[in-house]
Image (cartoon, rainbow, N blue to C red):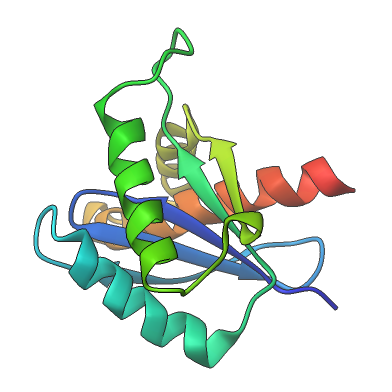
Length: 140
């Protein structure tokens, strides 16, 4: 069965979710120095080398009007570093529109009555789960 990884990239964190079927599971959050994407990629490589994967669905944060902004360039810079370090090839990377995933992740956690601390700790993983489920639903 195929294994998929979902990523929600921030300036200091990478939320990770995994799936081997129809459902994605929040897995972990990688932390790195702000805007040090090389450090983030290095830590992600350790995770990916243990887990194995077929595709990576990465959140692509377009502006609400569909235009590309600073955050999209941040994701492209991160992808470029991943490609340069041979962690992945271009065919394994799937860019997923993530415009409302962080807000949805927060709503989900509020509905489960998680404390603010737990919400902060888990928002990136939950957003990665939503990104990955968007991809999985697109290939069904």
